[in-house]
Image 1 (tube, rainbow, N blue to C red):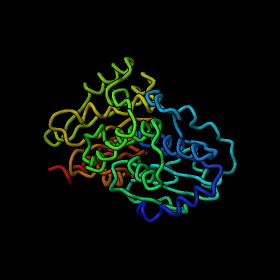
Image 2 (cartoon, helix red, strand yellow):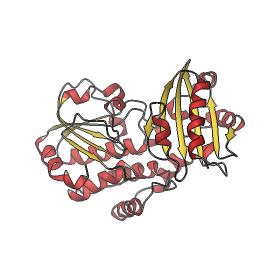
Image 3 (cartoon, rainbow, N blue to C red):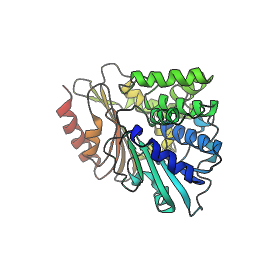
Length: 324
């Protein structure tokens, strides 16, 4: 349901709540972290007692966001007046915090993914036409006349920039640029630091991994599809956690002529993390759904159990249907 139809109910639920949990998805990205931080900043300014959750390691690159050190500190709490779920459409994506809905009297879900599966809620705002959940949160703040502080502006800029690939992805719209313009008018956001940390900087220890990815990249369909497989022996050798693996796909998507990528990481014997990316009209979310995953049109993924060869066979067959 669209945000404008839920504003009054959201306002009422927040006004009645004193203890509020804000939660995002496991393996939190910039959109998730930025939204959670911005909402927490706002709620605390209203005198609420706020706890923030997102299962998984919060990358050091987000340390410029003031609320980052407060994530996952109150896991023993057994009751909240209100739970606000951000940037996810399925309770399973809460990971270690999947029991939080059972600890809350009321639940608000705000998301921009397709086909929401999160049914256990009092308010569901589902707007897949928005590039990021951060854009929806900005619209919410505008509707409620929330004062945009530097901390909120920084968090929301991070949210929007990360889910649009620093405004390179096809999901970037005129509204995306409008929101960023308004945020920059309201506060002096350090966009240089945010953009460098999120889109340019990498650790020196990742150089061997990057070299491996570049050397072992394969191509199909006349160079339009790039395929990378990171075996478990490489994951173990370089002690690669989620953060150090995430983003390696960009070395494939940046190759001239490539319009889609498959990046497979072997997490353990018979279990694979699959990351799919595309440019333009190819909908990798539909391809991810064939192996039990999902996501956005141009950025999706899945966890796959089974044979690596069978996985590649299925994915290549699906890409064959859409790559011209």
